[in-house]
Image (cartoon, rainbow, N blue to C red; front, side):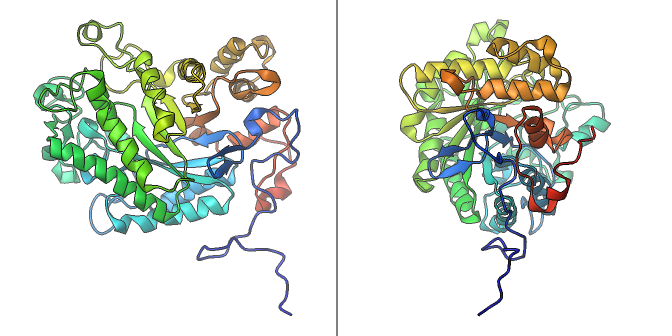
Length: 462
């Protein structure tokens, strides 16, 4: 009889790592008192161990040329794997270009070639070995492509910088719904000061090829072992560019003009993607619910993408096989009136509005809120509006964050949550233990990784 190995390995990966006794980030005891934030959520055939998701965050850490162009690296294994160890339920790989010129920068990842599958598989293998799910955000940057990593532009005192051919950029192949020097993201092109390249208009055939390339990238994601796919239609990237009358000036085909035509590409990408992935695989969509231009002179003149537009789309998503709408804002015009990334509870309130509108018609669509909690003051606002506590009683930032996250997803005692999940980005960069710290503040005793159990009961140093 072979000896028993009590330190059971995770199966089906090419190296040894122990199977955790219990999945990190899950409560040691589930009861009626457990906050919804720490209860599991089943979407099709996959189950999130809690309601906390790591947002896709650009890392600018893939090769810009050569045989490894666009491939994920050990940096991604270490970074994304760490979030899985620390209890997040679903960890997203950053915006991944479905075409070479669909990357935001030359150092962003891509999935336009089978050679890029292996790097993604290595990330997926490790994230899943830690009990989390792995997702990928498929994207095309459109007219916002061929820029450099932000730390390069920061040195120059700019928010962003164009990537020229000398750093493997593609200034002659930047594409968008409309073309010309006046269609650069930051206004009429100025070779000295513009931060983005002027785009060329996509032909109808090129638009249709993009649809197919989203589908092909989705198939590669499945081969790599990804659990969840998200389509990126936010932040002024290509699909968002087509949605907005501010950036879509097409008049020569069915992809420009009225609402139906401007949404056509998005719906075709959704349908093509859903058709090639397994029936039991969840499909998410990220949208900028508003581009924050409604009150500008330009927005009043041309129209803009707003919350009502997003609600019109959201009501069509369940029939198309989309399971969750990931609600963000802005990014399509330099003249936007609000900085959606730094506005207290902005996305939370919009997510709640969209969720209520969809559910009012008895449609099933999960809604996620991004840009959640970074400061105690922001958390206090969310808690007060949710009616779940007194702001004056919140003693410190992590307690405020914990209470806000709890209130946002609270579905206990017949309450209507503002969102079904929360997507956390930069706060994980600041504080990788965020899941554990929030659990502690909420009085939820959660499991840690088996290797960390010896430290789980020690006081937290902050």
